[in-house]
Image (cartoon, rainbow, N blue to C red; front, side):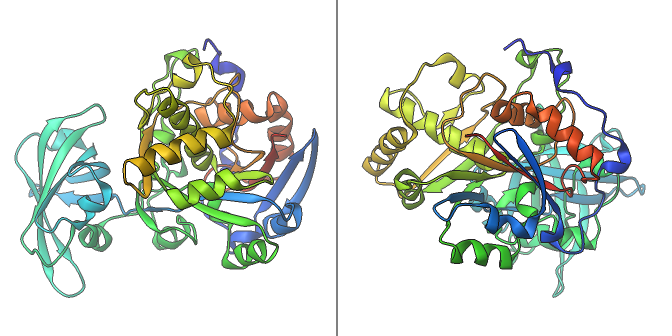
Amino acid sequence: MHIPIDQYNYHLPSERIAKYPLEKRDHSKLLLYKKGQISDHIFRELPDLLPPNAMMAFNNTKVIRARLPFRKKTGARIEIFCLEPAHPTDVALAFEQNREVTWNCMVGNLKKWKEGSLETIVNTGKTEVSLKAEKVTKTNDGYAIRFSWNNPEYTFSELMEAMGKTPIPPYLERESEEIDIKRYQTVYSKEQGSVAAPTAGLHFTTDVMNKLKNKGISLQNLTLHVGAGTFRPVKSKTIAGHEMHTEHFRISIETLKNIKNHKGPRIAVGTTSLRTLESLYWAGVLSGMDQPFHHIKQWTPYNITSSLPFEEALEQLINTTEQAGKIFFEGSTAIIIVPGYKIRTIDALITNYHQPRSTLLLLVAAIIGDHWKQIYDHALNNNYRFLSYGDSSLLWYK
């Protein structure tokens, strides 16, 4: 994978980065790319642009208030950014803990926190809870931090909600505000666990969702918890030197069957949905080869030759999961999708406009090839807004 990252660079003026969301979600611009042609639309027109026999896959993960502010007795401000649970590792269990829990975290202003524990008072609206943070072990991204508190009537999830801040992307170059609590969250978010939003979904409203349903379009939910690694820049000269982050996903057997049996076009809402679908394909392939299949490594798809159709791969995965007596398939993925990768699971992708030299831009190029340059030039020349709070695109692969 000696793809020079400089080939996936473009000039993004800072004023083109959307610092705030539009007043109305579905009033964002929507670029349609199909068979080499570009047309401009408004996102609320999406139901009219899709065939009635389409299926859409949504990532229903919910962004948590992962940035926890503490102060030392000296007055120094320390921010602990919770990335993923370490003990227990299950996200739902970690949120349910009512005495202590350990998370892998990044620590802001770490040089001011050399030793000892940090403590803060959390106002829950009903009472005050004393929350303590202690460094346990060093990790790749920071530290494993043990949190403990003095009131078992409150779960860690409730304390996060009471004191935490929404982890908006660093490139917005501002502190999170009241508006972000609601708007850096999809209207269909359900499963807590992400530290970044699946931003292609931010344009959807209840009205748009209802129009899709009324048209007969199949709406399917999966869950991939988005990690902070999604913002990790590519620093190597070629993509071969970039280490992808791992993200955890979960999907019901019922949904797997719905996706497998669908006969019309499949559309992924966002890059996280696409990464999940492609990971499910490879999990199915590996399960049929009696190989470990609950974690898809970064280069696994490039090291295995498979001509298995998507439907057959899902059938193998469904059978293996049902034989294990489970009604959900759970796994993790570090899959990287770059030019040269063969997309097996979708016909189209809904996605925002991504940073230069990013793995997400390479994913877009894997779907539409060098046409990404034409599309991004068009977006820049026609006042599209970029990145997480920016405008959207519907890119047809076939």
